[in-house]
Length: 200
Image (tube, rainbow, N blue to C red):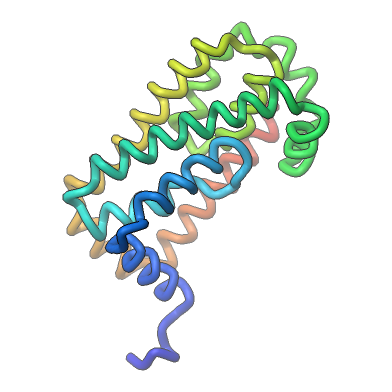
C-alpha cells in the first residue's frame, strides 16, 4: 500500500501510536486530561487507549497521570464556576448549549451533587459541565474533590486495565476496523453531550 492510499483515520491512528513511544507522551496525555475537565471537548480516553495499546507496560502509569491531571483540571473547572461564572463559565455553558437550563438545574444540584460528579466522572458525560456547575452552585469542595478522585481513578484505571488484559486482541480489532471504532467513539462523545443537554 502506497503512502497516498493510507486513509486519514489510519494516519491519525499511526500518529497516536508513534506519540506513545515518545518521551513527552505522558505530558501530552496529562495535558489533554487536564483541559478536558474544564473546557476541552475531547475525552482523554481517545489518547489513553492507543497509548496503552502501543505500550502496555506503562498502562498503570498512563492511568495514574490521566487521573491526577483530570482531578487537577476539575479543580480549575470548579474555580471557573465559583469565581468566574459571568465572564468565563456562562460563555462556556452557552458554547455547549447548556446556559438556558442551568439556573433551573442548579437549584437542586447540591442535594445530588456528589452522585452527579461520580456518574459524570465515570461516563462519557461531558465532565467539564459538572466541574463548572459544582463551583457555580457551591458544592462542598472536599466532597467534590473526593468524588472526582474516586470517579476519575476508577474510570481511567478501568480503561487501562481492560486494554492491558485484552491488548493484543483489542489492537487487532482496532487496526482492522478503524472506521467502526472511530464511529462508535464519536457516537459516545456526541451522545454524552446530548444526554447532558436534556439533563441540564
